[in-house]
Image 1 (spheres, rainbow, N blue to C red):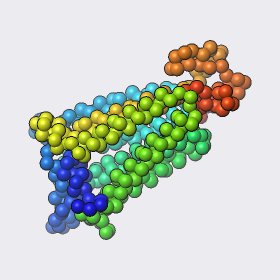
Image 2: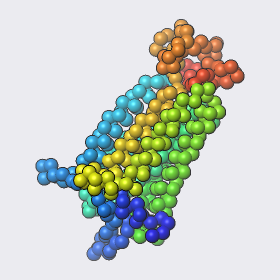
Image 3: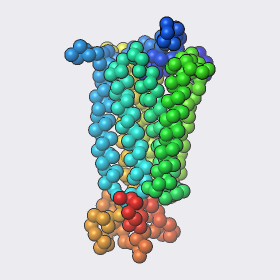
Length: 336
């Protein structure tokens, strides 16, 4: 076992791509036939109306994730003037697409032995990378390197996310189908793209948000949301890749690490939403009229007096005020 091999990861985790890597044989007229790497223990399947469904527990979590994502996306879209609203919506759209494709792949809607299966797993890997890179780009919005919500901002986000998707999708397909110099036994490039690069961009996002909170905001409470989000994600990965077999055996094959990893990922995404919500506010001009309202002690209902330019300013003259950063704009219509 060397760097870039999936042997260690796949022997302890029921990850869809594991059935497409590892030792393989040559099929007649159909290229390679991967034997795959099977974990020691995985959740049992059920038979419903002559249809075998895998990972039924994970399926319920994915369905719940879609419902939660729809609710969070609706709440984000309702904050018409909040900074980064359109960019964050793109992240939740990608997460929803990843959840749908995971529901199809994890639960056997696309059977593992079928010919379309490598393509669906490649799409899943591509969406995983696109979601991670989209989140990283969202992390730079608060620094106001460019105007949020504009065509420039959105196209930067779209192009980077699309590039990450294409890179991961192509690398996965080349590996699964043994095209070019890659093969199910030569997985170093796929490992680097799917695990190393994605881990790096997630770390960049976390570090950027810590710098944003510590260097800009007077209120450090949002650091708790960041910390809890990182905790949920890391715990989910540990449960999936380290303790999956033990939990599966202890639960009599009803649940495995994939269930808990999917649940922890959902919690992590919810905390990203909570973090963004806690450091943003919208210009209430659109909901209560142009008449200024006195500030309130509740941060969710807070409204401060504005100057003639309609922008809040802190004591240092910056547009960062209190525990909220730059989240009001001149009543510009590109945020609607």
